[in-house]
Image (cartoon, rainbow, N blue to C red; front, side, top):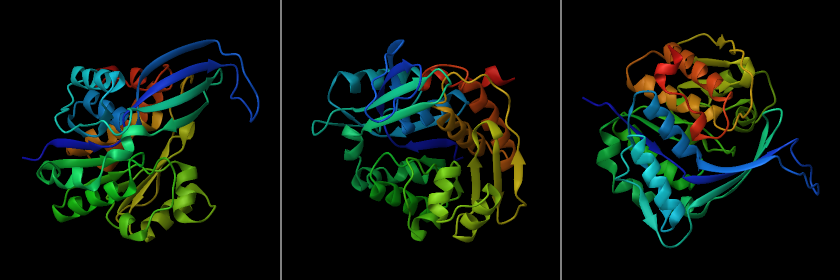
Length: 297
């Protein structure tokens, strides 16, 4: 029986500075703290899916450096299958430079490094892994042609394909038409839809463009979701004292994938993912902030 979640995406080491406010262009802000943690949207979502109870295999690329070694050791401790993670000497492991303001807001600059070396051929040689998955979860911090290759395999074997379209970029209709569940935030949804509109209008537009189901995350306002078969539903946000929103979206997507893989309905999956994301913003760091499923009871 298919049960494995395959996450395809990025690995970064997050270098985090706590600052009073996000610096404006040309401004230097004196920070109040600094630390490093494991990050990268792909890795964050793989960790979230594993902590949500999923059986996770991670397809990614790291450099042949100390950061890459540390990342692999960390994922193994998270019970993630690391057998499919590529190591390259062509680039260093990815790095993210993150400012976290006292308000909980953040700004992020990413040096992709080895993430840019995850190529379509790396996906094709692992076609059997994808074919036997219950869910494939991807983001946009690796080359777009790599994501398109994964989407083609998902359609070929009728595997649900979840795309978190971040960082935001325009996508062709040919890719959107292969997406089972699209999970943009409001700004990403506007870019994909090509219009400025209400979240409900954006969701309707994206479904009309070929996406089977759309979930638009709205931060503290929760999320809305819809598909060809459903009305637009708004799930209210959960009150939380935010200290760092860095991995809230990744937590949401990882939990969503785990619940879909477990056979839950879209409604059930969104509800638990929303709850997990709300808890994550009350903690510092990317992967350290991701809750375990037992914490949500």
